Image (cartoon, rainbow, N blue to C red; front, top):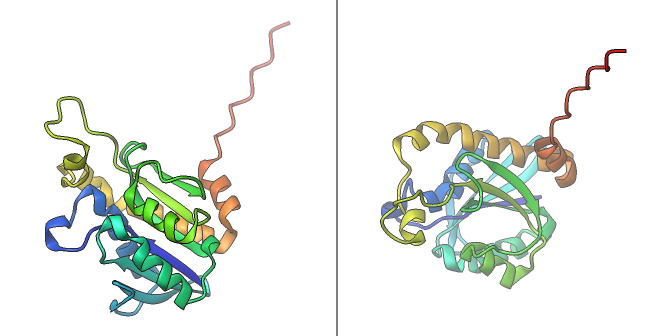
Length: 199
């Protein structure tokens, strides 16, 4: 059993914002997992599905981002899912837009949703970090304004491929294991062999 969490804020005013890219990715995952309808529990909405024969629970906390752990910890306890089998999909300022990276454990890097989950159940869960980039030069407003802002037209056009990449990463974590999935997606391409020196 796996618990897959998309982090975001509830309410229409937050739809399609950078901070809610975790919700977007989870919706795509629900489709891939042929999940049933979302229902309310754990201060969240959740659905159940299967990925390559494994049971998965898909969770969208409705607590607002800063209190995500109030939803994730009870859900993990109810379904008896170990922290190592919890996967959180979240926005990541420190990665360029469209860059998606896997990570296991570690700190929260200032992300309040991760901070609350770590406080309530420890850091040993898997993260799928969906890059949103940092505010561009000349951006009027602070970082919170940028994070809670909506994607521009170029980003919106690229978003389906970004969430598709995240879905594939989650699938590989479940089917291959976390470390092999990380190796598969983050291995640096080998440099081409050097031409032999002329005699």
